[in-house]
Amino acid sequence: MIETRKDQAARMKWAITAFFAKPDGVLPWTDWLRIGLEDVLVLDAWTTFKQRSRAGDLLALKPIDGAPIKPILGEDGRLPMPWVQGGEIVWPEAYQQILKGLGLSFGAGIAVGFSGAQGRTDATALKAANKAGVSLALT
Image (cartoon, rainbow, N blue to C red; front, side):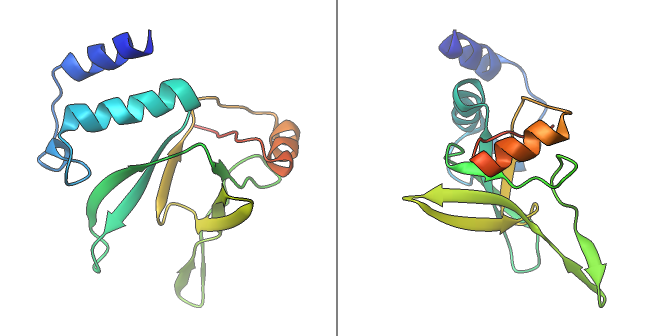
């Protein structure tokens, strides 16, 4: 079923910009899409590294393994929002990647895009799951 869905999506006529002809700078759209759909349908997590220029322009969306990445949710069950402090935007930690027992945290939306399809509104359950290391995400 997963392969069928990936085949169907890859055959669709997409109105995409030049950027999405090769979203990661290497793979054509259909191959890149199949990688992402595999992660969504198997892991419920399509995760990309947002490669940017020094000026902050988006250069590439590189697929990365979403299995070891979990969102860090606030008391309300949502990702923390950035704020302005002293004229600078402060990006709170929003994602954590666990590799070989060591955690690395990422700012909200700076380097990693994580999309999970299982939305939840129960903030208490989300907070408990987050503390337990269960990877849940709101859409």
